[in-house]
Length: 130
Length: 130
Image 1 (cartoon, chains in turn cyan, yellow):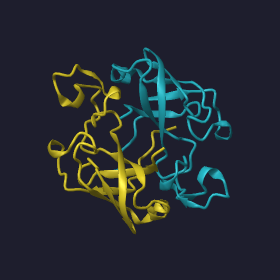
Image 2: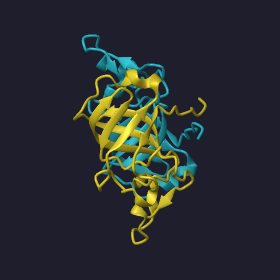
Image 3: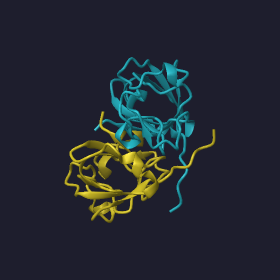
């Protein structure tokens, strides 16, 4: 099979504008954000409501895809290791996993708590926490 | 930005051959499996070893991408809802999230416990459990 195309199903609206100001993880002081979904995918949101814990999958479009080794958390004091052993956004397929709590769903807009993704980051998927 | 291409970084070797015989979740009796990585990505595995809990991201290549609503767990007795409220493999971007424990790493091969992905499923990424 050929490598497939990702379909963006929406994008993030957030006060976070660049990586320097974003926390490294959602539980490290990330703000509220709004997920804005494409109209064709609104039917897929049915059953998600306030208080639900979900995992948002994003495409980290400002990451580097040719990085295989990093210093964890960008700190040179941490020994270099493979990106698969870290949560670095820089990796061959820069897919972000963000556990968030839903605050409100209104049509194609979903407000969520503690999302460290940057403004305009494309959304790939939403799944319930197992 | 244009929708990007996914790069497959490896594939699954598993005794599971089709969806009918696969458990719905990894903790529902899934077998051991081996992740076989492409040679160019082996450097990214450095730092992962036996006993580590990781999340494997796969591309569920036998899923349907035009499904927006399902009966959860394929059971008509469960009221239909949106795929983003479920773990159905059928969804716009059929990305699987599989929490597994690493049993052994040997070069480009990683043996893991409790993986419900089918044989030959492409691998997208590996991340540590938060």
